[in-house]
Image (cartoon, rainbow, N blue to C red):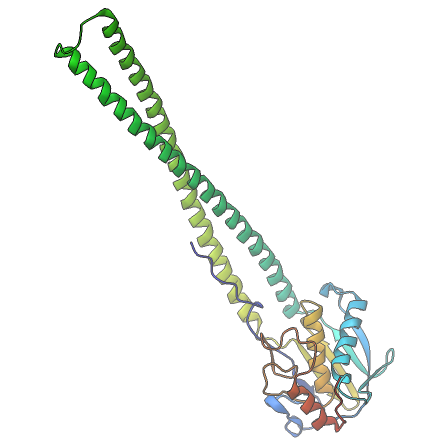
Length: 319
């Protein structure tokens, strides 16, 4: 009845956005990973927070904090001003709701349901083990009582044999003692038999509960597999995209499950706005995929810092 391990993070790695230039030949601007980036690093990049679809269930202040944190990840490493913010001016940063976020939210709900189901199964298994341990203890006590009963029965049968063979005095008192002993043995036998039936009923109930738990575990495992398959299928979408047409730029985020994922996604797209393409280091912000190696990063990796210097020609400082 083993429970399979969750696929951490839903699908292991998801594809981060590239950059799409709507004018010119994209091949002129290809950077690491085969994705286009801005044609150059023109700093500071002016930007503003645009439309935030309320279906993301993220407050504007939370999105603004994520954007500020993403900017800080880049600006911490240079004295140059890389980004400026002006309401309604420059590059728009938007959160657009589509099947990517809808699918992610549905998977989060499914994950929460599976977590509750896992807790229910764990509780049921724990109860089953407690009842099984209690039953085993009662069976052991019953068997000790049966052994004691057998000893008393054999002793009584010996006394009856002595009576029948004439090896003891045939008095009324002796006969009464034998009959009293026989009555006590019959009563004890009846009590033990009742106890045995009760133990068998408990064992049958436990076996039935165990089979039911096995069915629940099998159904749970199938639900986990379905969840993991859905998560894997959902990982093929780009989470966000940087776009540029002439002087018009935008960053559109399509999936952000939480603050950290939004911050890291925005930092990645801001890198594209600086003319930085994808880098090979899986631990880098500018790696093409968000996976276990870079998820939750709060600072640039060395590969990101080197790409910043190469793209923008800024002097790197140690934070």
